[in-house]
Image 1 (cartoon, protein in one colour):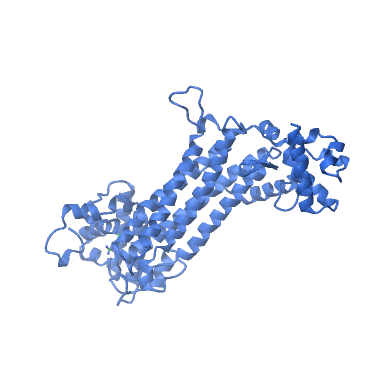
Image 2 (cartoon, rainbow, N blue to C red; image 1 turned 120 degrees about the vertical axis):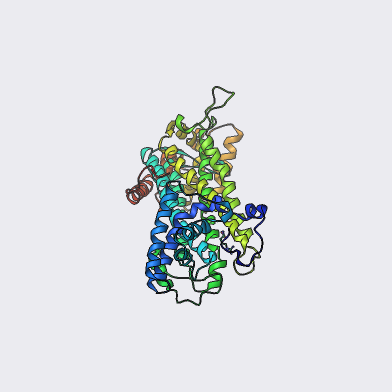
Length: 465
Ligand code: ARG
């Protein structure tokens, strides 16, 4: 029997019960729902709104229920709609009137908003931890291959040589922004909605600050209507996850490309690849492909959430119940992806000879030649044009840039000197880029050291995932 049926004369139609129930998925929130109820009951007792003996019974029974759920002996009932009413109904069944006092001054509207924020706090921590592990795996790979050099691409065309570690550290930077975005999102959502009631607050002297302190919130929401209508925190969190997924997807795409026969820059360990059911020779980077593919569902969760909220009148509307499945799926997807990417990179084989060969095309050093001319006083646009003509001159003759003699070079670059002929080395090219943020070996080593230091307390592989 529903907990709200006093004004109803007939039972809910079975179809309606099935359509409206959320317990199948929102039961995931039970530890947070129980923590929220315990803090609320303690406050009701301490504030003298209910007898402290009742508050104690409620707290003890809630703890017992949590243990039963942990041990899978708790019976979830779909006719009780959601996680909140399943737990509360069991409490009332066991404690009678004392149990029926728990919901004093509270609504499921402020309860769910509180549960979700508590849940999100743990998820922020989990995703941050996994991001750190992934960063660590990339930094370690960079350290192990700190001299490897490969062609950096723009427009997917060979552009300039860069250190492999520099490329990896680009992702470390992206993941760092993800960590801080999650932190920022947490800072905004870590306030307590409880006390907002259904939408208008309460006539009872609830001590909201006390509940906030008990639950580790930094403060309380200032407007009861906003408190129950708001799901901005989910949009922000999902947007942060969408960016994590996008970063993973770009890293995955680089990996797929590098592992292709055309590139042959890396090979993933057998344990992190799968085969073909038809072609015996195949070893495929399916993890990386799935990482790309799964990005879609994370974006989908974000779009779904934004769409649910668009045009919703204040305050709580049942539409908001639809905020959960996409959220849970996005978290599972991103956590699962990060958990597998870290060991995938930790065990990857790097073919630095193939990388270096590809980076040795002298055309990749054309910019170095233009900048050499700039140092001699040639305006950059003019230098760019002259080197461009030199590239075209060589191409017409099917010559590599470093095959030209000084005399030939001077046909298009009048100011060329013998040292120009020595510029066509990828090692020299990167070594000349020690500007802060550049791919110079000293700079990259410094960055690797800085990251190693920063990540030294991160475990290499999560045991909880
Ligand atoms: N299961 C509901 C949700 O997740 C809880 C709040 C229900 N409130 C209500 N008035 N029906 O949104």
